[in-house]
Each structure stands twice: as C-alpha cells, then as structure tokens.
Image 1 (cartoon, one colour):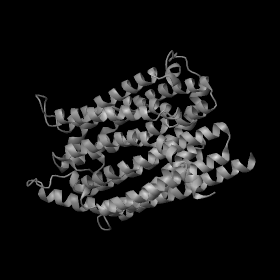
Image 2 (cartoon, helix red, strand yellow):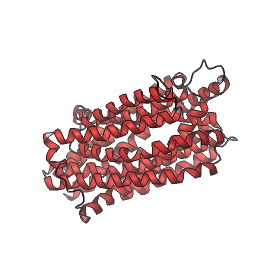
Image 3 (cartoon, helix red, strand yellow):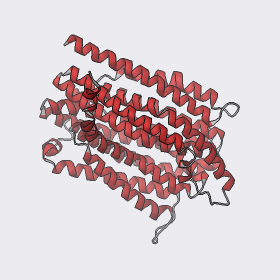
Image 4 (cartoon, helix red, strand yellow):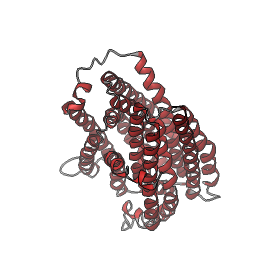
Amino acid sequence: MSLGEYTKEFRYNWKLAAPVMLGMLGHTFVSFIDNIMVGQLGTAELAAVSLGNSFLFIAMSLGIGFSTAITPLTAEADSSNNFKNAKSTFKHGVVLCFCMGLVMFLGVYFAKPLMYYMDQPEEVVTLSLPYLDLVAFSLIPMITFQALKQFSDGMSMTKYPMYATLLANILNVIFNYLLIFGKFGFPALGIVGAAYGTLLSRVVMVIFLWWVLTRKERTRQLVTRIKIFVLEGRMIKKIISLGAPSAMQMLFEVAIFTAAIWLSGLLGKNPQAANQIALNLSSMTFMVATGLGVTSMIRIGNQKGLKKYKELRRIAFSIFLMGTILAVIFCGFFFAFHKSLPHLYIDSNDVTNYADNMEVLEIASQLLIAAAFFQISDSIQVMVLGALRGLQDVVIPTIMTLISYWIIGFPISFYFGSEEMYGSFGIWLGLIAGLTSASILLYLRFNYLTLKLIKTK
C-alpha cells in the first residue's frame, strides 16, 4: 500500500484518540499538580508522595488493565448492533470493576507495613503513610470510573470521559491549593491535603460520567434500568478471561517502573525525588501513546466485529505510524529541554534545601535523556498491545510482557542501578531495555495474527 493509504486515517484516528489522550493526561496531570505543589514543601515530601504512589500504581495498574476488557467487547457489540451484549458488558464491567477497586483498596491498606522492610528513608516512610490511606481509598471511585470510561470508549464516545477528567483536574487544583497550604481558613494539611484533593476529584469523575451516559441517546438504554444483582456467569467469565491477562500486562510494566522508584530509594531521598520528576514528565507523553492504544482497541474491535481483516491491518498500521511520528517529536523535546524541565518541580530559591535541590535537578536532567530515548519503544509497545486487545488476544502478549520487563529489563536495572555502577541512570537503562524488547515481541505477535486472519478468511 502507498503511504497515503495509511496517512488518510490520521484524521479519524486523531478524532478518537485526542479526547482519550486529554483524559489520560488529565489523570497524570493530577499527579503532576500534586508533585509541583508538594515539591514546594521540600524534597522529603516529594519523595514521600513518590513512595506512596508506588504502592498505588501497582493497584491502579491491575484495576485499569482489568477494565480494558470492556472496550473491545463493547466495540464489537456496537459494530454488530448487538444491544443485549453491549448492555450486559456495561453492567458486568461496572460491577466487576467496583469489586476490583474495593479489593485493591484493601490490598494497599494492609500492605503499608511493607514500607518498613524496604530500606527506604525513615523520614519519607513516616510522611507517606497518612497520604497513602486516603489515596488508597480513592482507588474505589477511580477503578469504577474506568469501567464507565472503557464502555464509553468502546461506543466511540471518547470525549465524555475527557470532560469528566478535566472537571476533576480543576477541582483537584482547587482542593490542593486550599488543603495543602491552608488557604481561606482551611487547615494546612501538607501532603495529606493533596490526598484529600485526589479522593474528592475522583468521586466527582464517577458521578459526572454516569450522569452524562444516562443523558445521551446512544447510551441511555444501555446504562439505565439495570438489574445490578442479576449477573450472568458467562459474561463474568468472558470479562475476567480478557481482563485478568490485560491486568497482568499492565502490572508487569507498571511494576518495573515501581521497582525503579524503590531502587532509587536505596540510593537516597534525592535520587528518589529526581526519579519521580522524570517518571512524572515521561508519563505525560506516555498518555498520548496510551490514547492511540485505546484507539487501536476501538478500531480493531470494530473491524473484528465486521470481519474486515485487511482493513483491520491497514488501520492498525496507520495508528502505529502516527504514534511513532509523535514519539520522535517527544524524544527531541525531552532531549532539548532535559536541563530546564526539572525546574518546574523544584524551588531553586529555597536557601535551606539548596544543596538537596541542586542534586535533584542534576540527576533528573540526566534521567530525562534516558526518557527521551525510550519514547519510541514505549509508544510502539502500548499501541500494538491495544491492537492485540482489540483482537481479544491477551494470553501470549502477557507472557511477552513478563519476559520483556522482568527477565530482560529488571536485571539490567538492578545491576547497573547500584551506587557502584551508574546509579539512577543505570536503573533507567533497564527500563529502556524492557520497553524495547516488549515493542519488538508484541509487534511480531500482531503481524503473525493479522496475516493468519487474512490468509484463513
């Protein structure tokens, strides 16, 4: 095919992906705002948020990964006009994700004592515990929201979750300002104030998106008059069979980034704070790739329902091409501004913490060079993984992600991330190796499956 056969899909890809990108960026922006505001309190507080969120990210990855099963099932039902399956997917998806959120909250809450056995700075652990309690509870509305979002995405209504997330971000900034610093008569709660802001904004997200879906003609009948306690074993099994491997895929990836936080903590509070800065910045560009990954799920799920496999492959490659171009642009941006971007998080005029702040800025600028280079492989792996989920192929990709991140990536991070080797930069070399391996293996899997589908039709 000519290049034009792929680029002509860019407009529609962007139409679907842009709201998802903004919505996902909104989730990351909550963390971005928390980090900037908490960073004004000191490097110990910033490291405490990093440590607390490392526990949260593991639970979130399981919940969000599990919820992705809803999108391809909804997209397939929508393209084939199967009202019954679409409504059943919504009902069972919401129930299962709510239960998942509750389990994740309890898991994080009772896992807190593990912090004392992780050889982390004592000051950081003490600060992170009360923060983690509230943010862990916010997992319940967060993962429930994901069920609503994935259903809305599957119906190709990607802009409404974006609106919900933008609203939550505005509220989060307001709550943070009031509760972290104690403005307008509110108590100054420090990092606990940031946790309250996150919890309240996530509750609003769920309420708002539910309200929108009940008002739209396309979804009103699908999300209302639901017998919530009448569940079908067949649909529960189907969602779990897709959701559980997807959850593990996301867990393997997020867990290696979490391991990077813990390994950084072994080097001290300043390397840990620097690692948090680099992770937060790179996660914002990752959300753009994630938006295209969701677009892959939607469009591949639609084409699978229509059994148009040649079109499926062409559309998939148009998404991969678009994402790779954007990743190259982000790579150049990070490389060009690797010294200036960390200043967003650190008060350079803070005389008391000047030495710590300068060390954090120096380490973070080095890490952003590594982050620049893994933009491309990170983008490719998440887009291809979305396409495979659209094909409802989840088991083999789960094994591939396990191999990439934990058999290839983590040992490199562990070995080169010691103080005697390359420190924080060595940790990120392992991240690059894991992401690159995943992008290659997952692409080979997608290429094999789509060619097989075309041949056997």
